[in-house]
Amino acid sequence: MKKKDFITLILSTVGGILFALGMCMALLPEWNAMTPGIITGVIGGVILLAMILVRRKMDGKPAIVFNGKVIGTTLLGIVGAIILGVGMCMTMVWEIMIPGVIVGVVGIVALLCLIPVIKGLK
Image (cartoon, rainbow, N blue to C red; front, side, top):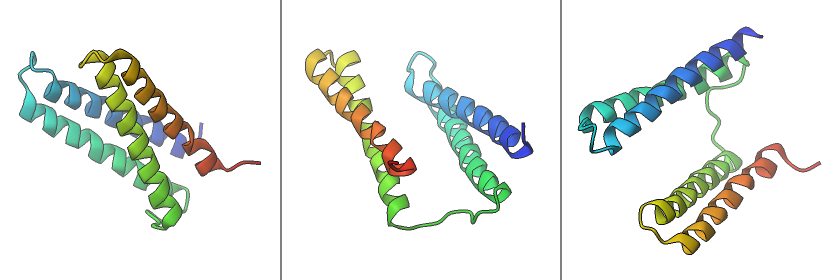
């Protein structure tokens, strides 16, 4: 395993766990830990962002490149994740089953569209 892959593995695991734990702390009322959850989630998010910067630096690439494709891809990912989350909320929280499944599938399709956008078709 290359050094950059190992560092990416460690940082993404730690950041992902902290982010997920923070979201659970903030969103589960039984835990009664909204403020510590937000702090933990933000720390996890910062570690994940730092992981991206460190990985790009180790690859010899510039830290962040802003162009139309990057912005469009990011927006597609955000919109797809939000649509998928709304579909999940519709089925699991609001108990609107069939429309929730349809909305969730639309979100999954939007996220699947990221593959050809990022990798391209050959």
